[in-house]
Length: 476
Image (cartoon, rainbow, N blue to C red; front, side):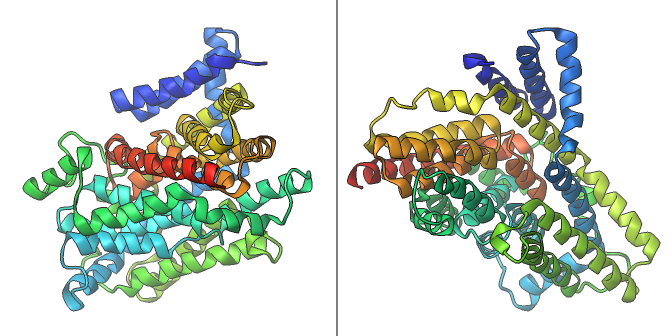
């Protein structure tokens, strides 16, 4: 069934309410309900039942279940690492022993470097950079909004620019289908690599983060947040609700425990190193063919198990205390898990309404080749903003974009780069995006505050990228 313009209503309701009311869960649920009303012929009770079933039904998708379980396990891992004295030991090393981190600029630079170096998976990148840097950015009165921006704007862009991860596997799979169907020639890896220089938004976003860290030339809502933190020491605005419990995610070391940075470094290293191993195993010997969701789940589970042996053998905690700390951390992640469930559910509803296909149909066959990359960048951005998923946008828009580029005579590599960059930009702007939610979690920021402060930066970066796409569209 073609729902046409009605297919835009659920994401507009969810996003509009989230921004205006700052109640993300209620906004997402009402978006789901609106979608079910449309699908079920405006029958209230059937739509209500369908909304509840939609939230339950997401667990039928294995990768979604793994992401939610990953989030719970992450909460436990953060808590036991903090309780072991690992985070405090690492921070003491950076601030007191080596004095590498001595002000707000170097504290943010630490998060920035982690975001670039750990390119194996966006969720792990956000988790590590946020968890490690947050005590330091708090110490030097950096707003949580600024930390969330750094974590968010270095995760997905870096994972797309250095595609030796689950992102690369997924993108090559989509491109490979178009090659096998004869739409374009070449091999998937080669086509993806040649499109990387044209991921203008991703490149600009990463460079912009470095610019704002080094120059401190913040503006708009971000400047207000930074001035608040600098003048009052309040890293969160009055009345803000951090995505996770401060007490649970900032667990002090156990009494009598000597802080030791290796109690943090070793479990994190195990988690990071396990990611390519998981990709290799799930890809039957090919990292680029592996399952990202399974590898992430394995990585955090392995790290959590390793940390348990490490701490118990050192007599830092007993087995009972280890389990209790994990439960405490899992409890802190419940709000995040609920938001992820509703975010995935509204994504499924939007998929049933074929919102993405409708948006693509608005311009398909109506534009010249020179405008192709720019139009597809805007279309992918709008789709990711409305659906809250960059991966879902890639799945819909890459086949459409490649076929449109061939039909219009538009350059292929800039077109692919434009779709990828557009998906990431829309994700950065959307309050219903799972990665945006994860960035708020890792930085313990108010979610809507994070969206409001990051949005102007993302829009400006997108505008610059759009100019580049117009140039290459006509030059090439």
